[in-house]
Image (tube, rainbow, N blue to C red):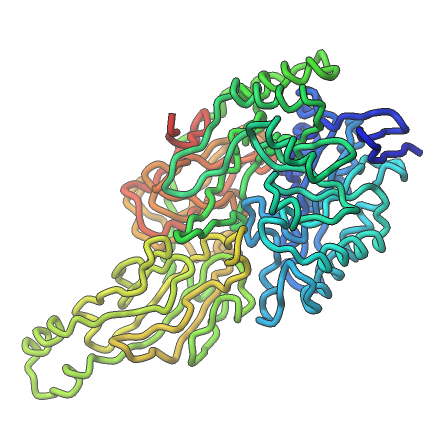
Length: 609
């Protein structure tokens, strides 16, 4: 069987020096029918290795489960890498960051406040052991010494930016070796003295993460890694986007020059990202360094291979650089044709209020729980309560109706939430009152005069993505710290987790037909059907719509928001079927016309140059 080792100066494949030319490709961000295509295109750019994280939370949405079906079939993904004649690097975390929801940690992991993540803490390490017991056999059987493609396994992920618990790292090594992993182990950190010292152990091979100043960064890495090959295990060739900001791009030629400098120094590389893919559904992460910034649905990353799998300018620039150091195939990928352009009238609709009975069963509680306390770790929750009249107006029963209305208008009742995570739309008797947004640090909202009489209060809360980096990983979602009205705690809540299945299945009698193209008032579900060539990629434009989720044939394409920067959602061709296709939008605010368009090309937003 082939053999892969770390030598005094080089990686060694069957005893011969081997330079790793790798590209990051996350199987869980790409439709599985496209895995082979993306892997093949990596080879056509001159790469010999594919690197992937493993998203623990995707495989284990509830404790005791480990899903490897469909787009989570890591074994099949690695087999496709092998079929292409390429090698694989696996980075299982447990923490992955990756701009992914919760940095890859399952929400249930934080149900017990005693759990201490990313350190040698018994409750956490027990959960990690359960995860590895399911994952590692998949990887172990596909290692290079067993005829598979896997040549390296990473321990933790940029740990030096978080902690320095050496006992924790040692126990990860022990768990991984006990799981049958025999290939060499690596760590990765930004090349600073502190991070490299804190984030690794002498028996682990250190690598760096950076996107510029290669000679300087490699020198710092060498000062901490005295022997063995130098490697930039995350060569940052682009960046990710946040809602309300610009679309990040980097100059292709400048990135190519940095790659050239890295390879000229004799280093190995993993290009992050080669192909970014998409944060489908509710899978995007977020950052919070004083301001909460959720990541957008597109994870295009300005990578060499675009979100839809087309070779971009960096593909050709990087291919030319790589050709100076390694053989590159003669075959080149072709540019895809423009996508089909369509107009779709969403002529069926149902309000959230009318659909609520089919969206799940509301829990009745006194004190307000977080979404996590109800074992909901993604999506939307609807909180409802009855509020009584303001004390001043309730006491004065002798007022005339006109006087009561005047008194009510003068009361000025204020709704206050301890903390909003992450976005809350407030309704009085189903009429929208306002929005409390975490990124604006909103906690209070003045209520209209109607709230001074007995009325119904509803708060629709959206988890916009869990923080994936830093100390706020694992925080609970929802309305944290309770809700008060004029300083008095509101009790007697109904809490409904929105389960979209009943709406997406087109339940008989749920939708009503509206005039074609008429205005939409949210929150509501709107539905339409269309025909398109089966198997062809599409780009759904959400121009003219407010905020919400889009579903095609029951598949959650992801979030859209008029904030931008992106105004299209990528629709993988395998989701598009023969005959009629069903498109459903859950629109939170409204649109002037209930019409959407599929457009020829993606629109990822304005850039900063």
